[in-house]
Image (cartoon, rainbow over all chains, first blue to last red; front, side, top):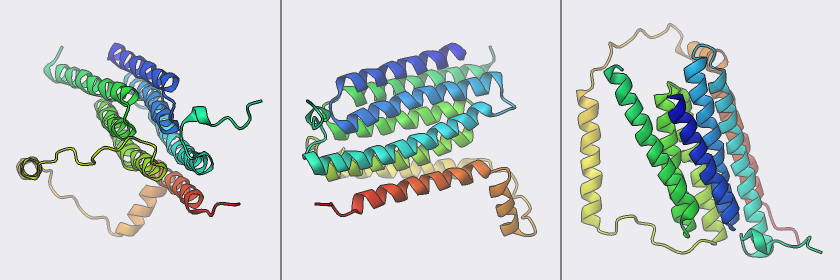
Length: 100
Length: 167
């Protein structure tokens, strides 16, 4: 079970990194970051289940992670909308106001 | 290896394949709308993994917060920023097929809920509201706090979205 969980988590994390690296749209970047967060949370849940089923520490940390992800998505998407109003696009390559 | 453990492992692998497939499609597809829908499938599969890892509450929170909250939020952001390629929203554009699918799903749910063996109905506590309050601030404190976080985040987002543009 450990092998399966760790394998799945790493595969998902790799997919998330791939998305962050290859996508240009800000919403796609958020999607990829969510995939990476979930990869980490799967590990937390798996290790909580396998090695500390009584203490529940892993599950509590996973809940904290989900809460943080919710806030991150809310603030991130608000930023996306603000950027869209300012630049008329959500393509992160078009946001270059600070470029010298 | 005993039989239930085998089934559990098979289910774990099956959910894992769905999760990986959904995640891969989400980062590969050109259409933003499809990417977000694939993210929803991925998150649901991860909720299944949580359930298999004996983290029932986590699975429910995953579906509520992620699939019900974040995916819908992303869809709204996509609609408001109109940056995605346009696609028809309906997955099945033949009404008869859609109706057949929906009704057979409903019939399956009904059959399942009618044939399930339910435990005996338990005794109500003397003061139900008192018991609920104690549960919320005692053994269920985390779900209570989590609801607070979700509400705060959504309030902030709503304020930012409806705020007037400063010229």
